[in-house]
Length: 388
Image 1 (cartoon, rainbow, N blue to C red):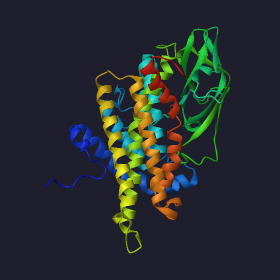
Image 2 (cartoon, rainbow, N blue to C red):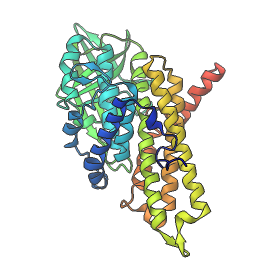
Image 3 (tube, helix red, strand yellow):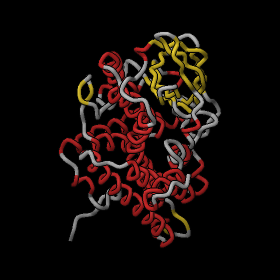
Image 4 (cartoon, rainbow, N blue to C red):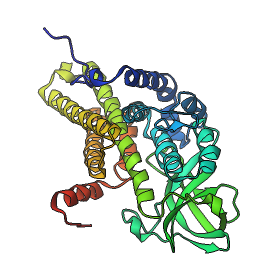
């Protein structure tokens, strides 16, 4: 007889990982079990981001982990995905912090920045000594980034930046923001530092999702920027969209961790909860629902692993990322909701993780492209027709 399968990994995806990838997964997993999970309930309830974890995350080499050099770990894409999976098993807020720092700030500086910009920011960000944020989304923009209103105009050797951004992770704690604006020369990225005159941020309060994460608005009122603040390597939509592709890739892995946390919770609960003289796990209805969760998690794991291998070969298409982001976020949210329901009245208590993951995933399925946006990306690939 075959040995018992891992309930969190029915297809033994672990056996497809390299030794280095397994080491990354296990190291981050232990960190999440020991340092993250014990404090996330309180952080969520208090609407606080556990900033003291940044130093430990940095010490593990999790910031800018896919970048070679500049004090970064130089890991492959699958390793970065596994980092996101384990972190989000703890909480989407911590994974969001690492995603923004790595994929939305360090990536564009590395891909499009000058050597001076790379030397100044990347090592400090890798060590957690500097925090970054990514300014693209605007109040009127949402799913239509082409409706960009933030603009920059040349003034002698400088640039003058005006506009505002909304729903920006890390906005109020960031030392530097990579801000995307329209110019007469195309869409450009600017590194805006926190103390520059005319730049202000405001935290968004009263969130019922991603409460253990910092979310804010940015305001730019005639911010004067030297030419040295411009990312010189791109002047088109390729800049911000390539960043989103990097971040979306990590999300496809991250939500697997949230789903696994919910499944693990209800597996334990249904074996202990006795109703009508037997454990819930002994009923057909519950077993069917648990099996469906496992099916969705297994499908998501295989999609993300394949996506990571394609990415490491340099053959990744944004449409492939959209398919996985759409599928995996929907699966994770459905699992979290069903897990909450299986727990009954206990499901609305923060004593159990599904309600927190469920609320977080309502944001994760929305940011970096809504479900509908990713469906239309895939539809355009199939038909050749842009239906946006």
